[in-house]
Length: 192
Image (cartoon, rainbow, N blue to C red; front, side, top):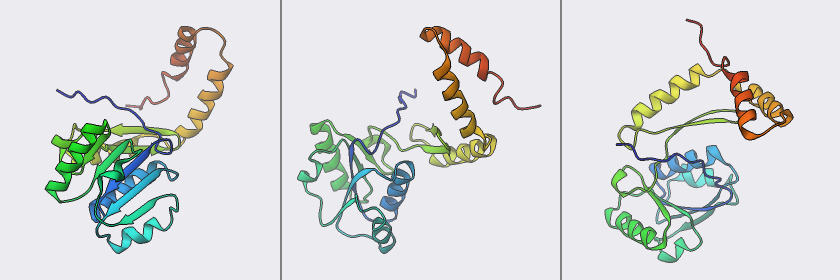
């Protein structure tokens, strides 16, 4: 049974710790920064691949520490992402995050995770998150491709118009929802 509750996190308002400096850590970093270039992030790793270190130079707000992880690295963090192949370190991170009530994700270890980094479809202000409950990132990627092709490029313009329309509506919440639903019911209908 899928018990995931999807949320969208404002990465510039919380502080994230990424542990690792290899290809998987680079992939996690790219996922994070593609959603918010102003994110608050600290990266801790004993070793870092050159392409990751070079990319980090474009994000001066990201703190990079090339050294072993220390428990003090978790101070003031709300999310921790482990992108290491070190089982003992991942277990230590899981234990520390549990003790400190910090949300935790370990790459390719769904049993250790409090949350997953899903596939994201972005069209302007529209974001659609896709999760397979940790079972198949490949299927999530294929669905992402399908939605990217399906959603019209003009969706961002439509969102702006709907926002302006919503601001003009007078009445209680129920009235506004009814009017907005009437106005949008045909927007994404496909001709068959």
